[in-house]
Length: 135
Length: 296
Image 1 (cartoon, chains in turn green, orange):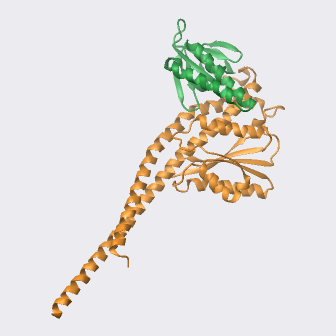
Image 2 (cartoon, chains in turn brown, blue; image 1 turned 60 degrees about the vertical axis):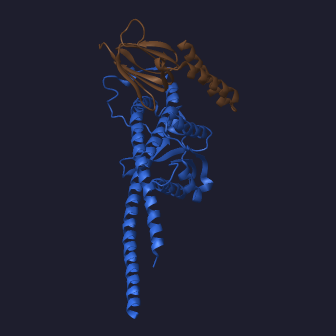
Image 3 (spheres, one colour; image 1 turned 90 degrees about the vertical axis):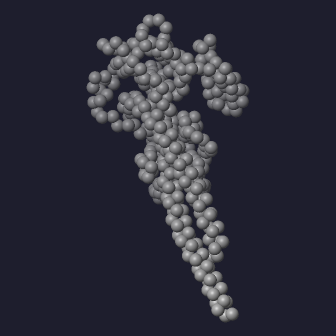
């Protein structure tokens, strides 16, 4: 069994991160799970939440990334996260985020159709969650 | 024969045209580099997506209740053609070659008695298609003044297509764009979006080592696939738009290179005529003066 996982985070626009890590905490739609080397092959959809990457297991996560809309593919000692939106928490700008939350709230109130409103609401909720994760 | 002043003006105007075309060529060259980088950057996501999709779809294909985006709705009567072109002209045959390919397909489908609908992405293609097929165009999506094509541009297109499919407005959807091969060659490409074309996976590559059966799905295959297919569609649209953007700049670059060279040739020809005319005028004047002096 390998000691490390090769972790890759890709968004449609680019490859965001590629590293050897010991564990990754993934927020699956049906619950959080920590993927370590030798994990069972798995494909799961993701919630909008924070992914914790542990370069070395134990202690604080080395990288925390907020992902929205995507799924994870685990095969043996390889874990690939495909996310539509991904933001590194370390690079996150609190003020900009707060503004985004306000924009989203505005979208909710302006939405004309139910589908639009539901989408805006989902975005708003996920951004709120992100904001609370930062604080 | 044109007077000296006319020639001078003409040379001046061709020279300023040449300056413009040269500037456009250089702008296109730098934009091309950026567009190519975007295409490169999007590749890993698309590859992973294909892999996951292939391993998923293999197990669900042919089963009843498979998602419509994957297998279609069983009919083949109404075709939606998504024609992706550029927002701007002055890029050689870039736009017209896409439109030509689309028109061929339209005519063929019409002969087969099918209904055709067009979704035009990009202003230039919409204008060209409107001339003959205006009644077939269901919508035009434009993205004016945009520097870089991103996921944010592809998503609405994909959502529109899916909404139309779910409303039963068409049965089969294909997408036309220019694939970027090199600066001088862009290939018009047609890909079928719905029913989804599942990338061929060499037999055994999945089942060896990590058997498909061992894969665990959370929630379950169908739910994941249902999530995945719209996203895959958006990714395909994004890739097409990115390839298109790179192709457009490549086409513009070579078109403007040609134009600059043509202008150069024109200037040489005109300068020659100008000098000849100038000399002829001087000669005539001299003859007149000499003749006048002799007459005294």
